[in-house]
Image (cartoon, rainbow, N blue to C red):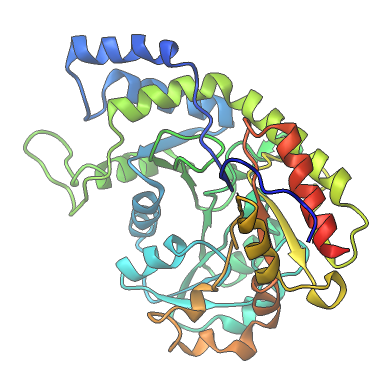
Length: 376
């Protein structure tokens, strides 16, 4: 097949790092104060700056997004069953398991691969307490429909917004909806604190409750209100986040530029489909997924995946396998393949191409050319 191998490994993502010399003054302050964790000055400043940037009233920082999701479920006292998607990273469902909650999987919609609201009501039982949708690839779920269903059946809604940093609909943050929204600041994300995460809440009382949960349940030096956990973000992470926040708009602009180049170069390829921007949405371009229809493209998704690897292009099959197919969940009634034909089909077609702010234009062009050649 035509196409020369690249001379370096190109991964699906690469963290965008600010200039090292700009981070050193933060480290010097930490060394001078010796305040490493427990709500230090950088931690408090980052919470304030993030709330302002994201357009939300209350945000609580966490050491990682998974612990944030576990604590969000605990903060709302979610029990019994929770309706969620099989098409996500495993942390979404693992957080339910850690809270002794039974996940109930429903299918996804084919346009943006998010939880399908039309499938939710038939999955509700007397044990259902919440809905846990995911803004897959940062594309907003059909939130109005989901929340209308939740209101009708008196259910909580927690959004897994791990991909959705900075995403807005008509200038309103999508994090401002639902009962809680949970962010990830992992190294692979648009905005990173190395590891990290956050919960967005809607009242001072709920923020206080969440802040207690992430710090063992301490109210003060001698009073422990509840059995919490240690999930605090430290000063190193917080300082790095403050510096990242300075550059995140530039990072998003570069991701948008790369997305538009891919779209231009890959359009009109038979058997290849990608996701377009949603009307009225300010996207963050966290991922660039494409869908491969073997019958029209001429090879399967997995064949393309391996062909790209042979040329040092390490794409990822996000999200494959489906969570419901994993050993710890596949015995659930809701995990039956007959329940999710759309998720099964798309999980076998999806492949996410490399995208990150430092990705060179020539590499983007070569990736696109390789895909065109394979299709021909």
